[in-house]
Length: 171
Image 1 (cartoon, rainbow, N blue to C red):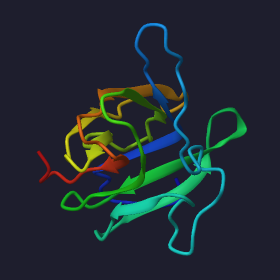
Image 2: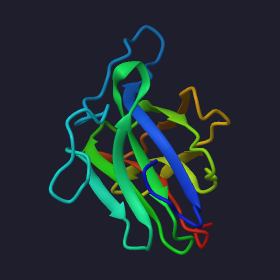
Image 3: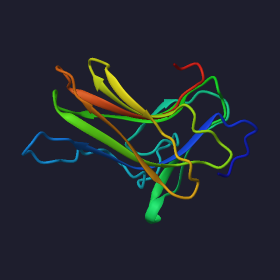
Image 4: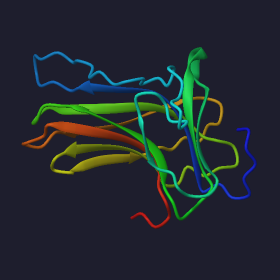
């Protein structure tokens, strides 16, 4: 990381987000298309990965940065030096109700930073129901796959994936 922060509430490096359906017996797994899931398409004029939207990020000492990822690819470094504010990225896409989906991301720890409050969240819309898992890795050298699986409730039209470092105020 090229920044010097006196306090780093949370940081993570996430690479290659995959979203797939988890079919019932006899059905095929299929991948749900996301925009720029491996963060290889650069950033927009606001420093947000192309195809993604910034989530929060108005705190002090917060940043999003594209860095080297696994196997020569790219990854997103989310640095949060403000314990009172959240930062991350999200993306919304169409889904079908009553189908089960799994979102997976590769993560690794950032030396000197706590991954506390780092989450992969899968939110179904319009119900606003969600499933989430912590993004935790003990390794600063190797990427570890973390996933969350959930079934879209009745009435689901779209879903949102959030990769976020939450504030300490968040339950």
